[in-house]
Length: 590
Image 1 (cartoon, rainbow, N blue to C red):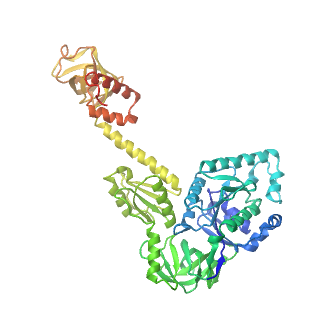
Image 2: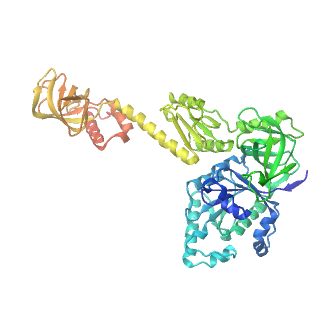
Image 3: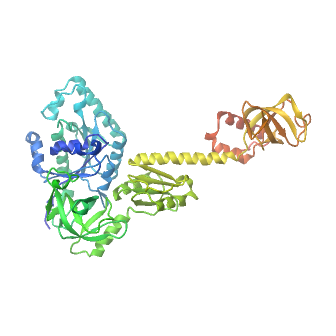
């Protein structure tokens, strides 16, 4: 078996509008970015950058550094924002050999950038940072010189701004556990992330960026880039879509072996793996995008790793992005290959706990990333699967309602709620295309449910209050006694039990009237008429008396547990009540 060096798979990722596609356009001399809706990448793009293109761009640098390039080219993948990076999965890791994290020099590290960094960290993918849009800095003078010459020729204020922005990124990366430095100052590429200032608009920094990427790939990834080119094909589905004249096709990355027209392939699905034959193969033309139409492709008899390819085959309607694909080969039966596929898909599709959230995502890779982050945040998962949110998902979420209302939620990453589905008010459907925002939104909702639940618990507790029996306002002395009272603190409620300042239960409030209308309660500052049971004015109670609500010890403890829901006034009156009760029992309410 002869091993050959394949092209490294390079992924461009970063915040929306950071300039990922434009950087690739500058390298390829294409204009894909102008064809995108709103100039924002909508789906995964893959293109082949031949070695001669790299040599042409890096020519002057190659001469200066005396570096020789041994990789046969680069398979470059452009991802929409950050999420589609997770589609590039293979068992136990990620397809990307190396990544370029694109950061807008003005905006710095944003929420989606943080998410990209976390995903790169999860998959242990080496990466380089392109600090893009240096040309928009005020006073920047573009130049056809190499980057270092261009940087050294800028005005002091421009140089200072670049240094400031660069070290802001260095500081943030340090907080996230990464050492980084400008590429020409890196002392150890195994420990430090290289930052390359660049401009997708002018091309400045592009040769240096390519040199750093190819240099890292050759020096540190050579072992993993060596493959048996004639071995069986292994790959991952990027997208499944309908093509005019071809029907349903799969855009895939082949990361190992060779795939030929007529080969039998096994493809993962949510159910039984599909066994089908390759009807036709289409490889993107050098420097062209897989996102483009048919003119960007050429029909081929076979493709070898690493490459992007469009596969035409029958029966692939139920295939999702991120699913594995394996070519049939001698030494393994179809059933053995199907079992390998089942195991790989089954690692992600979990039905785990009796109670927990329902997790939904658009692809196998996205679901895997979502599950990892849910587990990191100690959020239990009842069920996790791929596809849009269905009625069955609502039923699964409802099953958690009885055991734990705080988990009766469906978290949807890059998916939609199918139309005409009624969602009960007790179930939350939380959707977002940023995983960390999704988790954040869920935590906020969970806190609201918890507060609502706790506040409902407090509704049934004895309300704390302190009242004064007003002089000159006795309307009836007994059966029941009716007199004017002022609420000094807390809330007086119908049914409240009252005591004197010695802790002895005295009476119960039968009715409250305010401005000749019956009311259920009266707050601090209100003067009302109250009818009091089992007391006579002049005997058990007197005009001018101060009475307190009689508080069961268990109610007091509940208030202590949920003190966040109490006003300052309520906390103060509860302290007074506790002091009264502890005169007879020092451990009361403790």
